[in-house]
Length: 128
Image 1 (tube, helix red, strand yellow):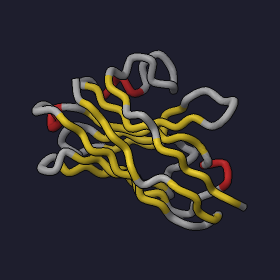
Image 2 (cartoon, rainbow, N blue to C red):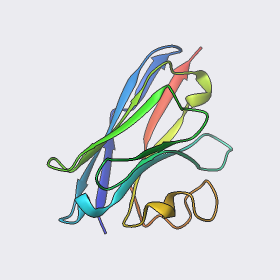
Image 3 (cartoon, rainbow, N blue to C red):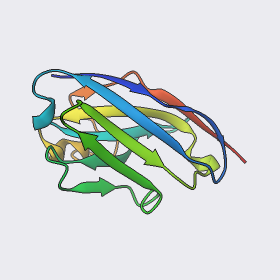
Image 4 (tube, rainbow, N blue to C red):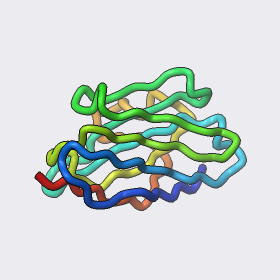
């Protein structure tokens, strides 16, 4: 498993941008698919984006497609989520996630029940 620590959350006005980062520890980081989920108050956790171990493929929830970009740097053991054109409905706790199998990010539903490693979460608040 890998250990994950998120940073970069905060308060931003609608239409603004934030960049989330996730630092991973563990020698096998470069072999893991990485991704982001979010959970808004009173709602189930939901998939946001994922990227394959090589960075060659990225996947996005329809709600963020065209606004968010996921990237990774295997040399630095980091994965990032660039969030542009933020909306109040993007307000949530954002969680970094990792799994050796990219299919885990959408297996069993959009809340990632089979994903093995999780960060502690970082709050993103978008004001209207």
